[in-house]
Every structure is written in structure tokens, then in C-alpha cells.
Length: 475
Image (cartoon, rainbow, N blue to C red; front, side, top):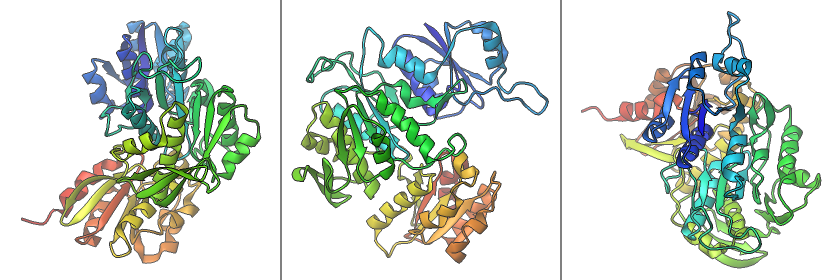
């Protein structure tokens, strides 16, 4: 079929486009400000990209319009529609669907090739844990398909279909179904479907990695998100497995609402899967008995928990913890997850996707544990997510940044006073309304041996390259 994707440059929709193209469909798409790296990846696949959402794209006459959740019925100041193409689709009665629904019907659960879906949900660590799990299954010879909201360095791509049948059959009637690992997002599906994306995926293996309040633009409180997670739990069959973080009270409340599947816990001392030792080198215990050891390059307790989640999920499809740890020992992580972008003037500059206070804290704590108390950490961040822009978690920022020696905040687009929110950090916190000023502040403060961590869920104005250029010693 010919599908035309609205909002094609987002990580999910771009991955869906790649899968559809690989499956043999004709794919075209549009977005506002068609931008790399997804635009480059899509053009390399031969996918035609159109700038904007003009109604003239109706002339393409695709079999189906696939609508991303960036699209809405919003109006501009002059009363004209922000997305004229969507209005034209509705007026014409042309067929349309959401990305998650199209993916479910045409890839995950297509009658000709139904897949055993392993879905990774959670407020934090979805991309990393999904990448870990896909890599474990790959190293075990299971050739999984996957869709990740980032680019795993071990694969170099964000999505692929994987083998059409499982190379090594598993137990039970579904044991020959090919495996597909997907990052399962709790954000809503589309303007016409306000359920979380993940309810469309119908996994046999579901990872509930963690759960706290986020997405303040669409969820009223934590209980509303817990309700969506329980909707996901309802879709897991009785022969399926829910892998749950035993440290999270919110997830205990989710399962208390009702659970009809096998549950495998991780994280807590009394869990099915637990860790003994530091995050960089630890024993993996299964119900208190050592079954494997993992020594790897990743840091932070959060990554130790991510690893346990991936190990428990892989165990459900027949991969032993020892096999999983052997794969994780070679795991290269994901782009924009404490990715070292370069060293200039003796200063190391990292890029990280952290944008929620808890993620910021765990990222900085992990680096502090690795570096020790002597090295200086300079934390640079922009509150860019919808939740942070609303100021819903501004009071948590000083707590999240405690491990840093100096803090720099980009304040453009905020309706709240970042300097006031960061006041508990004293003179160690600075703010700037533009990237150039921020770079100047960091350059003036940085010293050889420092580690600068830039945290954002966006491009951050290319600050990494600008910092590296500014920090170069004068010739």
C-alpha cells in the first residue's frame, strides 16, 4: 500500500516509516521543518519528504494517511488551521489512522506474520532498556525486530523488521513467532485517540521499568498514568510475563488493580532478579542465587536496574541470564546517553537526553560515582519538555542537580523564573536566555579536567559543537 505519514521526522514515526518501507510499502511523509538526523535516514531509504502540512498533499492519493500525535485541530491567530492537510483529510472522508494502530495491524500482529512483542514501558530508561533487550536477543541468535526511540550504537539504526520466523524456536504454541522489541510510550496516541500508545502493542512480554509523574500537559496526576499502565497490563495474555520493578510503589499499585499474567520482579532484594555489587561490576541473582556476573562500561544505579529488566525480559523467551550478561558486557549504549562528544582544552563534553528531574539526578549521580569526588561536573540543561516548560517540577531541580559543582540553565521559552527555582544552589547556578551567552558562561568557568554534561530532549541549539569550539585553546 501507499501510506503518507504526517509528522514523519519524529523518532517513532520515522522508525515506523523505515519498517513500512522495509515491508515493501510505498512511503511518503511530511513534517514542519524537515530536519536531520531522521530526515537524512529517511531520504537514504528513498522516502519522499514534503515540507509542511499543505492540503495540496491530498493529490498524492495514498491508500492510508498515518497521523502522528504532533498533529491537532489547532487554529492559528488568524483562525486558519495549523494543519490544513488534516482538515482536508477529514472533509474528504479519506482513510486515516494513528501510527501505533497502523504498526499493530500491519507489523506487530499482521495475520501473515504475528510477532511475539516485548514492550518496554516506564517513565525513564525506555530507550536504553529497549536497546539492551534487542541486543541481548540479537547476540542470542534470535534476530529480533525492533523500534527504538533513539539510535542504538550496536545497530546503527532505530528500527528494523527482524527475521520472519524465530531462528531458535521457544516453548509453547507461540514459540515460533518472530520477536519484536518496542519502546512502549505512555504519551497519547493521536488527537483522535487519547489512549497511551502502548495499549496498541498487545505484548506477550511487558516491562514496567519505573513510574512517576510526567507529561503534565496531558495527565492530571500520577494516578492517571497508573491507570494507563493498568490498561497495558490488561492486554498481556495469561501465558505472558510482566517484568516489574520491585522498588516502585506506583507499579505495585498498578498490579494491585488486577493482574492476569506471570509476574517477574527485579531490583529489590527479595525480587526474582536482583544485583549485588557496584553498577559497573555486579553479580546477577535469581531468587537469591548467583546466576551470572556483569562487568561493563555503563554507570549508575539506573543502568543496573535497566540491565536487570532486560535480563528478566530475555529470560521469558529462553535467553539465560549468563547469555544476557555476555551480550551486555559488549553493549555500546545509545546515542545521546552520556555520549562523549569530544574533549577540548582538557574539558570533556557529554550529550545526554535527561530532561526529567529524576533522570537528571541519576545521570549526574552515575557520573559522580564513576569520577569520584575530586573531578568537577558542570551540568548544563534546558527545561524543554512540556512538563518542564509548565514548571510542574521546578521545585525538584535543586535536588536533581546536587551532584554537580556548577549548574547552567537555558531559560528561553519558560514562563517561570529559573533563577529563583535554582536559588537553593547559591552562586553555583547561572542562567541564560540564549545559547551564545550560555556558552560564554561555561567557557569562563570551565577548567582542564572538568566534565560538562549537556542535558536536553532536543537539539539544544547545537551547544555541544559550539562548546567544543569555544573551549579550544587559542593557537
